Image 1 (cartoon, rainbow, N blue to C red):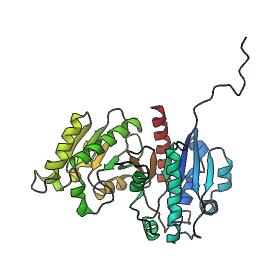
Image 2 (cartoon, rainbow, N blue to C red):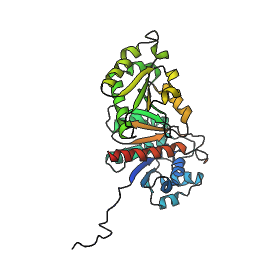
Image 3 (cartoon, one colour):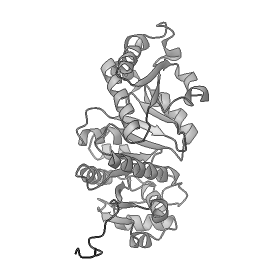
Image 4 (spheres, rainbow, N blue to C red):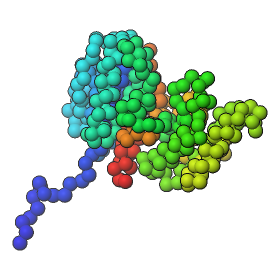
Length: 340
């Protein structure tokens, strides 16, 4: 006769998804937004655990600015802190290049943990690129740094709103001077970008059959070559090859008329050719509630859609809505990824 099951042998539910949060530029709003977002973690994200990476004294101080008892947050079962010490004392709103390596240390710890499957996803609060560059480390942005550190040859930056049918905008190029965009667009590069967008929408966002609308580069999508040939020579051939692979990618559409309901209601994502072609529309529609997602990585990474807001740091007036949305998405993506 079998012995009755004991508590130690009773079946267990799935392991909670574990999310690392980097608190970003210490002079900015990242630390206080993190505290404000996680104050209700047990209610908002049952079945998820969060590890906050940052200086513990700084976190307590900035949490207090947002009327959050950080010690009480850490006393719960859903949030823990991992102390990484500041390189230099910090004052809210005052940048110090000495803390550039500290910001990268937070990011490195999160990436290493995610690559080792210690974390199921990472969420990044905003950092200040100038602080890192002024510290002597060349730095273009989160997206490029994540690609380099994970040895990913191509990643795609996508910003998205929230809701039942969110507006999503991915970018064919990211942080490039406008004069360099045309040369950076290639048929093979665009095909690979479309593959990444299609794959990640299916596997990380649960979109069964993604529909991707693609902008042109030039005004009026080139006006049949009169305003530029990139649409004829690069974008259209890439779309034809992607379609042959089974990717539902349509275009190229003039960017000035694409962002309207009669097109967007039929789309799961828009692929824009450069940063300031697609993101102003997205941020106008969703600012404060939008998120940034890096597609194509071997790990899940989400972030806010705004910067360090130095003028609001330490005041308690910064809105945590975008960070909460980024955490929502990271938890959802981690669960989708685990279910595959």
